[in-house]
Image (cartoon, rainbow over all chains, first blue to last red):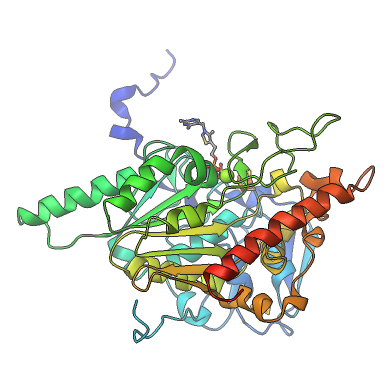
Length: 90
Length: 327
Ligand SMILES: Cc1ncc(C[n+]2csc(CCOP(=O)(O)OP(=O)(O)O)c2C)c(N)n1
Ligand code: SF4
Ligand code: SF4
Ligand code: SF4
Ligand SMILES: [Mg+2]
């Protein structure tokens, strides 16, 4: 017997979307990855504010790229004031 | 929002510690500036934990709430393309009624997002009514110059001569035949508490405007330019540069309207071009980087069309300079 598909009664009212989008990994869209020169980086956070995907985080000392979500768009590399990000082919 | 109130200035090292309220895992195209725009707006909220978002249909909505996932970490509501400001009105009215009955002690801040299809065309009636009724909300229209989510149809925001799938380029027609609506002036003419234009590249200016629009009592509107590489046809890493050039050519001047003083004020990134007009770039520099305007340059350069685009840009720029006593 095939498993019964969920019916309308199993879906939350008004089609509420309840799961955090972070369960969906957009990182596998990427064909290029950002590589940062840590020596040159001034921790100015320009890349952080512009990243459309919140794939750059700040721990108070340094930035980190989250490749689970980075789509490889290259905006961070383009906007970095000291040009310390290279986009490298996956 | 009087002159005496100290203005909030976003400091990256402070706001980068804040929780992301528009998270990773959304499915906008790679490099879509609408994602950056939404993050900036959410990081500028005065009361992030007491904010409700009402959203019109469009790329930002579709890509952020693909069932069963949501990228929003605040209460968020979508119903139709045409009624996001009406939804916000209803939410506010409901909270007011519950407060009167002693069921709530706080009325949350209300933020509305819509695209240009909604903010320039399909949702104008609902927005106009909500502003007239003086609801307390901020309406952010992110303008990517077309109905992108359904496959690049032209809107009231599409500039003249731009290619879209409903303003084709061919022997008879060179893309769209009409200029774009001066939508922010239309909303400013409603005399809201606050109205402004912004660009996703000028993040500090945009975030300060979001904060003002959220804090001011009464309706506020921000028209923010947010490029789209699928339609505009530029390399996907260039989104911020496209928004920057639109300001540097004065195609998209940045300004504010203050309800309290009924004054138009040019914002710093545009004021420089009023003070030093020689710094203003020819609009052609922006046009030629975009595939949607390719037919103005190839196979034959169309000086007539480029000059017409420049004339329309200059006229709008002169008009806003006059309104803000800078012209
Ligand atoms: C009344 C109505 N007409 C048409 C549609 C189909 N539709 C969904 S999104 C969309 C385009 C939205 O354009 P815009 O507001 O500019 O946002 P964008 O997708 O460009 O970000 C359209 C036409 C709809 N949902 N409702
Ligand atoms: S923009 Fe460049 S310099 Fe600034 S934090 Fe990012 S990588 Fe470092
Ligand atoms: S490449 Fe794009 S998605 Fe990846 S970190 Fe840089 S800006 Fe963010
Ligand atoms: S179609 Fe354009 S506006 Fe829509 S998600 Fe893609 S880049 Fe962004
Ligand atoms: Mg649009």
